[in-house]
Length: 81
Image 1 (cartoon, rainbow, N blue to C red):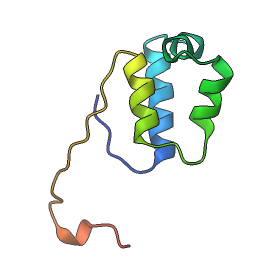
Image 2 (tube, rainbow, N blue to C red):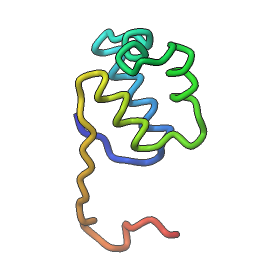
Image 3 (cartoon, rainbow, N blue to C red):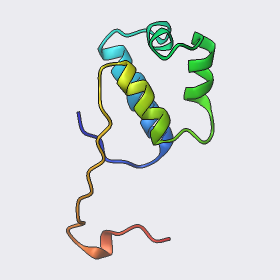
Image 4 (tube, rainbow, N blue to C red):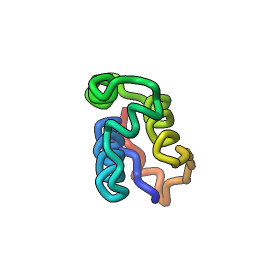
């Protein structure tokens, strides 16, 4: 599965989609992480959700987080800071 990064919120959405596709419950993931299901909900909903959080959750689901950098076809396509 490959996604084009847009925001951390998008990562959470993709993780939730994957959970639905694979029929993995939040309770199962929470058990793998040794936290309560409410703790997982809090983790998924936090404002500063990051790659480390994503990696923990994906690992509990049997997935790895791989970050791949690709050069833009046209430097003009680069987002402005």
